[in-house]
Image (tube, rainbow, N blue to C red; front, side, top):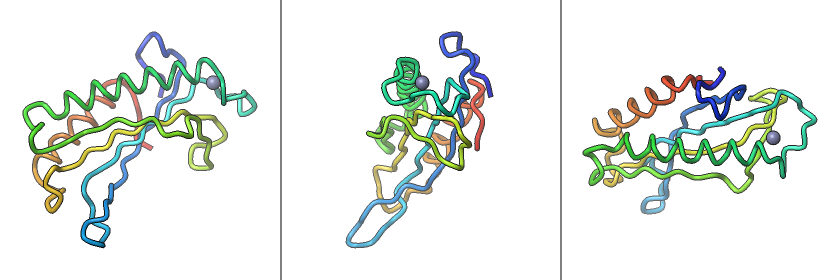
Length: 142
Ligand SMILES: [Zn+2]
């Protein structure tokens, strides 16, 4: 639950997977997977999250980490898959699913370049590499 990274010591990061859909010829089609990382540095539900320097720093660290994971996960498959990292506009979230803490979210979106076949072996391999990188870092699936 605690990050191994020194800069972010004391921080909790969880992640979860969502299927990712796009409108293809007027139909919603699954085109890939989204990994949402949610990081929190404070267990105080009253800490003023919007504008908090540590929340912003954590968001930046997570974004850089996610970008590096995204790049490595595609190694050799760049022509078949694409992987993007986003920091949602609502840079801080809290939700019942995550308890009373404030979290900063960062998402990694993994898509097949061939929209019709999102579940191919490349996708599975890239996703496994992303998961491994997250677990090695001490991030837990929630
Ligand atoms: Zn904060």
